[in-house]
Image 1 (cartoon, rainbow, N blue to C red):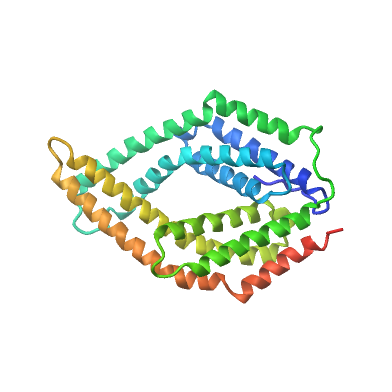
Image 2 (image 1 turned 135 degrees about the vertical axis):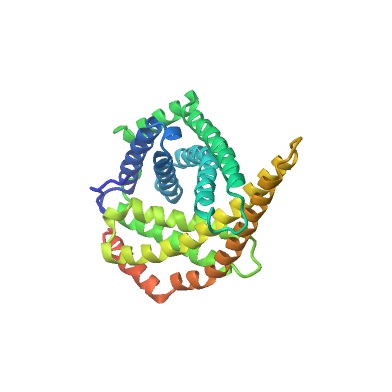
Length: 312
């Protein structure tokens, strides 16, 4: 999902296009692998989409604004079409994992819940596949790849890739640091979710341009960033599961003959998910403090200074 021969001295416009063209090829390959039949392909597709979005979003002033905005909107919509299936997949896996950990859950009721979740996951996966394969989506991806690889398309040849990437990574890091410092005990869950997306965008930039970055400092900063993402991801997954389990319980309770055992099991699972929301919320403060350190800033500087040194 990366281009290994990026040159920090090449024009930023050309290097960014080549990187995005490689990601576009990966996206197309994963779509052809029928994500509805391959959960791993769905995960890889989401990563490729998010990595592309991170590169496009960061490339303000590098790519023409019209193409950048359009690509960002389309990639965001495609990624959103895969979210329901992914959330249900995570919940199915969590139900399997917690079958023996949540006390008092009727195994038979849990199996009925799992079967319902699998049905809904498969339906959501089929809808996601249909969305990415509809003619308008296919036509846009074809046109996007043509624009990315067309040798007749030219951009600003003065800006170099290395300094441009250094500025993009530094800007993304500042966003994470500023928003992370603003989160307190009373901050709503949505703010942690937003920080999670910003941390992911930074991580995807580091991954996309890793061939340009000094390995040691990039690895050190990436490890701290990964720890932060793990806490924020576990928090958001638990928040999503609370909502899904509450919604499913509402659907079951509206049936003509509600299944009491299923409703009780759903409530126990919801209480457990709420407990995990609180636990990850408590873990966030120390985890962010471990990221927001002088060592992280030194790693960032050591990573970006060689790229900035190519300027001129």
